[in-house]
Length: 336
Ligand code: GLY
Image (tube, rainbow, N blue to C red; front, top):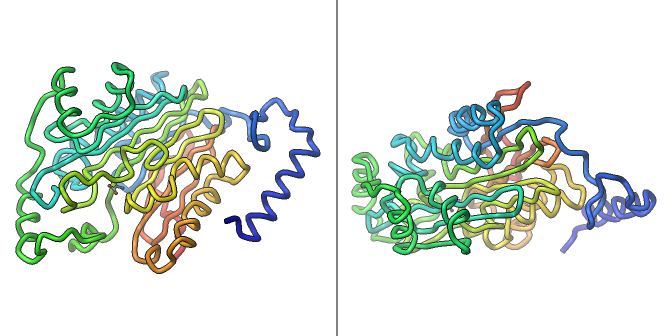
C-alpha cells in the first residue's frame, strides 16, 4: 500500500516525467529519468565497521582499472578470512548443532548472478557463488551440492568453527534449551548491534555496478536455515540501469519484502538512495509494527551515478564508504 506521502511523491514524479515527455537521454524504458551515470566513480560501500577493510581491498581493484565484480569479490573475501569476525566466513558462529553454514551471493552489471546457501567447510563462499554464476547454467546451489561443486572446482575444505565460536556455542547450549533466539548475536556482551552480514556494492570507472553479500547467518539457527544473504532480490540486487542494494540484519524480514529488489525499484521510481532504503523498511513496519520494532534490518544502496544512502530499523547500523574524495564510516539513520 502506498501511503499519502509516497502517493503524492509518485504523482509528482509521474507528472514531471510526463511533462518532460520521458525523452531525456538518461531515461529508462520504465519510470522517470535518473541522473546520468559515473558522476562519482569509482566508489565502493560496505555494511558495518568491518566494511572499511573490505573497501580497502576492493578499492585496490577499482583503482587498478579492475571491474566492480572483481572488486566486490575481493572485498567480501576479507571478512570471510577473518577469524575475529563471528558473523561471516571462517570464525562465524555456528548453527544450534555446532555447524558453521555459510550463505553468499554475487551479481554483476549484466544481471548475471550466483549464490550458495548452507555451504559448509569452505571459507570463501562468495567465490563459490561467483563460480556458480560463471561455470554453471544455474543461479543457486545449496548444502552438500554446493560443497561438492566447490571441491570439484578447486576450493579447499577446512574447519570453519574456531575455538572462540565453539566456546560461545557451548555456553549457549547450557541455557538455550536448543531453541534459536532472534537477535542472539546482539545479546553477546561487547558485540551490541555492531556486526552482521557484509554486503558490498561497487561502481567501477566504466560505470558498471556489482554487489556481493556473505554471512554465516543467524547464530545458533536451526540447521538448514537460510537467510536473505544468498537470495537474489532479498540480500542483494543489482540493476545497472538504476543501482544496487544490499541488506543486513534479520534475514527473514528482508525476504518477506524482497528487500534489496524493493530498494532498487524505489530508486527506479525516483527515490534517492536513502529514501529508498527507508521506504523499504517502512513496508516491514506497516506489515507488523511491533515485530519490526524488535529487530534490526539495514539497507545500503548505491545509485548508478555514485550517489549512496542507507537506513536501518534500529540505531547502530554503520557503513563504510570509499571513493576518490571520501573515506569514512557513517552511522545510518534509523526508524526507531
Ligand atoms: N542477514 C543475515 C541473515 O539473516 O542470515
